[in-house]
Length: 375
Image (cartoon, rainbow, N blue to C red):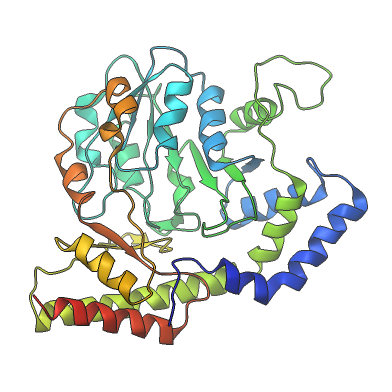
């Protein structure tokens, strides 16, 4: 049995006819940029996530960049974020000649440690980018509460991995000024190329974002702000509209797989050794969508190799933290990142996807159990 981390091959076989049908409609009307499918998808996402505004953009990275431009980030401003993230979170800050300030993560959830943020806020702090990692939100409610006296600081959620996740019963974007997500093919809701979206309840900010994504103008009658080329193709919207119909079912399957993993990890720790492996810690007030199922073990590299020998594909997010890359080490402001640095040497993401079967999941658990029997 060969098991991949992602299920694009299975997905394309199951819904290919529906995908091609929607793509064909776009080809017929020839509106490849900001076509009707874009508006339909924006309204559907806005309604589902209870956000007043959803603006489609060209990628998750561009969603972050456009949001920072929209709130007026300029050279010398400081942006607080996590070091345990994909490089694009910090890349966009540097693109505007602002200063990334990296805060260590919580050792159990791997999200930014909210309790350490206030000490790092200065007069130059203009925004905080919490990364909602592996499918569950950062502690956004606590973050919002902790900076309530700093009205000039905006919260921009990097929600590339956690679209549809819930925090205190609400979708995570409810607690932020802006929430940015990605439609990269392997995401919870993925297109067949690049794409992203920005959510905000601020009407004026939404107008600015719409202008910025299209070179600084909505209607081309006037260009009153500097923008970028950040629109999402209509073809990608047509694909997402097709896949959106299956989203609820797919999220249910991910939750079912995660529950099986949880049960088997508890079994391993109970029968063998309580310290062998740590399952994901989902906080009581969060509902994860399990974009990844990430375990922590001191035997990470050997376990990954063992899985590979048994034709099981796993992934490491992230084997380096941002400050350990040569370029970013010089550009970021940081002090003690011991949790993030240590955890990056321990984490391993097991296969979990929309079309993963119970048989495949059982096989993964059996292989994992056979590995840990040696310890």
